[in-house]
Image (cartoon, rainbow over all chains, first blue to last red; front, side, top):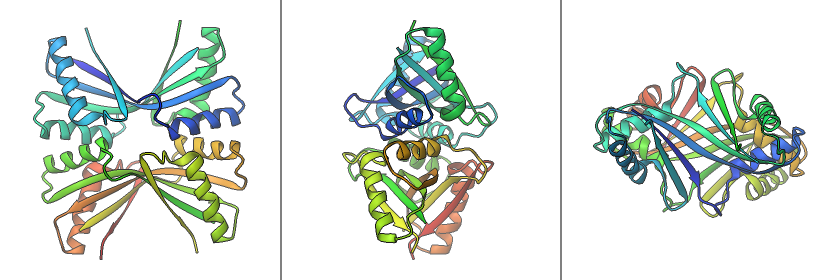
Length: 80
Length: 80
Length: 80
Length: 80
């Protein structure tokens, strides 16, 4: 089973990388670009075949390793 | 309209960050963890309200700025 | 002139990436590995030829774009 | 002993992140900005007290985990 995790900065946490991209897009001539935010996307192959258990396991991974939950949110998707 | 872009390393391109996470998960006691890959996730607010046009615009952003298409793939989703 | 900027997480800010590397090194058999921290390293070519002025300019870049000074520190080196 | 590792993209490998920063600096009004490249900076506490041995150990870490040597270079510094 494959789990997909999005780790994103919480609202209100300044994102220099996203800001750089936003400015760069404007300077390259793209108009109408508003806020840009950059996060991480992590794909994990796990042996667990029960979706609910897999999700619980990956939630534990996020809390223990993948995210800094003080400044970051995470979202987990597992294959049905 | 919001566009969401996933930039991931192409298959076959070694991913040290993903590898580190994979090993770390094993060392933290998570069993059954296979390959781990880490990519970038970029959210972009764009003024364009036509989904097809928005997607074309973001594709152009990917080719010109967001991805290194020699080693990275990208996937674009726009709100319906 | 070339400026080199190190952007690092402040002490006390949890660093999931560094933690993953630390655990991975242990799991790969490296012993005696203590804390690991991961930051960014940015090299910037600037036209300014006066070192003090170049440094001031890059400090301004750090404050305005390169670092999130709430959670990150930065250090600037310019060629003599 | 503390080891400091710089992992940078090889010359010739396109660096979207660095490019974004370069464009963004221009758009923020900084003039005279040339090429910008972004790499990683990793600090590792190691128990080894012999500088040569520490460096050899960290070189091994770079080859096995920290860098993708196909597209990245690394540089190691250890405290004297």
